[in-house]
Length: 141
Image 1 (tube, rainbow, N blue to C red):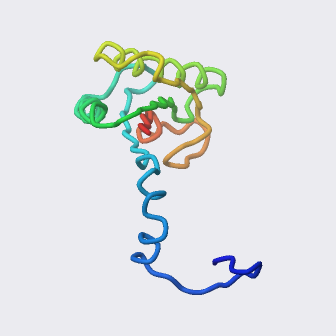
Image 2 (image 1 turned 60 degrees about the vertical axis):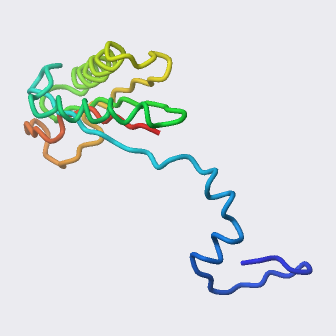
């Protein structure tokens, strides 16, 4: 839609016209967020072995981002109490944050959050041990 002479004109456009009209604005958009998922052993802050390459991939991307913000969000499965899972999810996020800091990431760039069992990737009933939900999401934007 365009406003011309106080009226709104609507129509269909294409990518070329958008680029011509708003190219500078689209170039100023921040890079799309990238999310990396690392997994954990049951009831622990211990990463699974297959998570180490994922962490390395996230670290390799960091120097290529002009201004980075990291959001590290811990999650659990639904085994245990909600209070225990809140604590465990935060501990997992803090553990990943510490690994990032030891690898050279500035601590002030990292936001750490624990979500407990509230945002499962794999919906389950209460007290179901689901490895896919024992994770930390590392979002780079």
